[in-house]
Image (cartoon, rainbow, N blue to C red; front, side, top):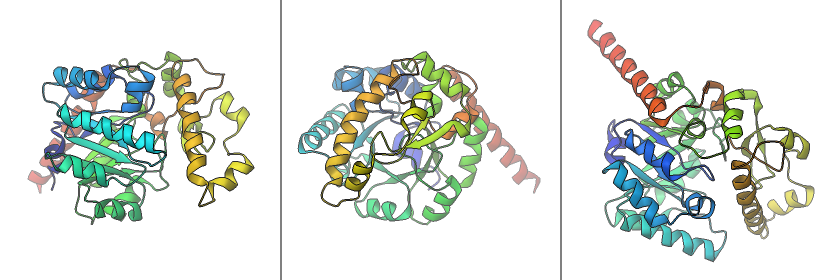
Length: 336
């Protein structure tokens, strides 16, 4: 199964630029795919942040990639019927435009699996622990994105090593997500046994990403201890840079919201309200300097990011590090 990820995606390097709201812009995704990695289109970002037509965006990326590894992010939460129908329409558009690799999250991926499998596509699902992995496999997903405690966005609670140990017997490709900000981190994560690694924060600090330059510089300047978890964005922990604004407003949801989030009847409504508000806050923060009503998402991989670079330079360094590690492994095997 060592080559299953490359068969599933068409990637020539086992690396994914993960979907990021609001940071996934067309130029970033297309540039990643051009370099042989998987670039994932995030439809909420495309339509609502960058104000682009989804179909035209997919065609642009496909044309530039010349059959490269284009992925599509489907958030399958059931926050509302309107949202669910919109996401189904977007997935249909992606399939019509030839996308065959999907990453699902935040809900039951069954309907995406059925649509993708019907045309020979594959679906990987975000998980943070074994119980969610088993549920996803019951819905016949093809692989798992293993989100660890060092990830940006909605992080997990376990280390990359702990997650691999917990999930390695499930018989599907595992992709590590979280904590990889340097080529050395990348190689070390693959050596655990993962078939690929998903990066997010590293690509925000790229020339092709269209976020505000202050956001990129904040990632370059940040250390691991500057990343905190806040529940004030979506009601569940989200990794952000601890700016002066975050310090001022705190990281916990209010007492009423905390109670409602634990209520079986009201928690979905509260999360929907939080999500709608957070989409606005995150999109606004993307285009503004710090110090205002802004949140900058980032993972603990900031510790390994030392400069804003082009996508080409980033992926080239990662590919070079992987090649060197593989050559060293071959040399060791010959010596034995």
